[in-house]
Amino acid sequence: MNFQMIHENYNVSDLNKSLAFYEKALGLHEKRRKNGDGFIIVYVGNDRSDFELELTWLKDHPQPYDLGECEFHLAFRADDFEAAHRLHEEMGCICFENPTMGIYFITDPDGYWLEIVPARR
Image 1: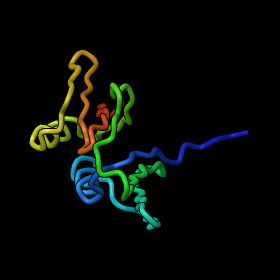
Image 2: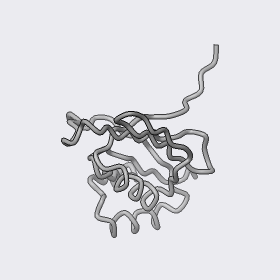
Image 3: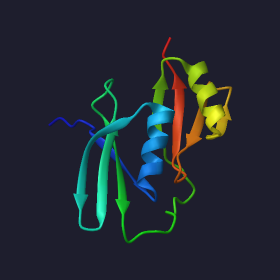
Image 4: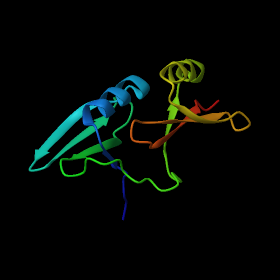
């Protein structure tokens, strides 16, 4: 039996703000959308991977999401780590850096952590 990872879900408070963030910060664009009664689901991704991030907006959930201690994250490998760091610094979304490990984390508009790692050498 084989399994393939296909997507991760994040619930978001402001879908347009989240879509703009993921496009600018990580180059993820909308691949498809589902509109339902009281919800919108947008799958974002890029051309480098089949893996998608599912952004879910719920009409009846206007309050911020409780993310606990944020002890989870998605990781992204940057082909130009220094340029990515400059962009995220300009965006003001870097929340934690670990120079010893050579990585850093950014947060999206809802507080989800995203790890940025350099290309493998």
